[in-house]
Amino acid sequence: MNKEDVLKKLKLSYLAPFAIIVNIFVAIFLIVPYFTISNKQSIPMYLKLFLIFWCVCSILSIIQERRSNKVTDSIIMARIYLIINILGAYILPLAFGTIYVFAAELFAYKVFDKWLELLLYIVVSWLGMHIFLKSEFKIGKLLNNVIFRIIGVVLIIGSFVYIIRLGFAVPEYDAESKRFILFSIVPLIVAHSYIVRAYFNYGLYLEYLKDDSEQEEVAK
Image (cartoon, rainbow, N blue to C red):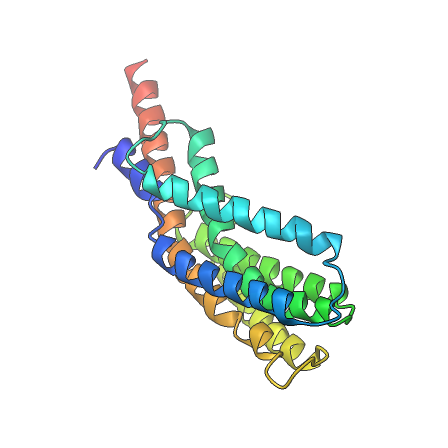
């Protein structure tokens, strides 16, 4: 397997089928309350911006996977491929949790702070996975120690605990409303599992670059 094959695998996240299902589910649960709630409030700007960002991330992720056979051999493009995979994966749990926030805002509950909390916990969860995988696959020189893997696991578990806590703390607009926050853990777990492959292939690509550099030094 050469560098081009590794980059193709890096672009191919295998997340598209799951992402399409989640995105359709989210879209349905955003559209239905918008057209069925009487005396609804206007959609706040932060949600409008997020919905645009969600669509952009989802489209970029699908396009990248569909065009996985066309790659550019450069470290910058490899990082872009990885970033698109990360955004495409971790936008899913946030979009799922936003179902609650969207309906709550329509019912005149001001839950921007709760949405920010959910965003923070998802970012912390990704950070934990990032630290763990960089250490596990020896990506870079700063995190190559077992202590960083432990820190990563603690951050991931801690984020799950706080998302569950948040799910019970948010105000209810109906009996089932809190479940969308709680069940956002499911796409978060799936995002973690899918992103492992992307980090592995990114680390493998860096190894190829290192080998090429060493061969050039020997040739000199």
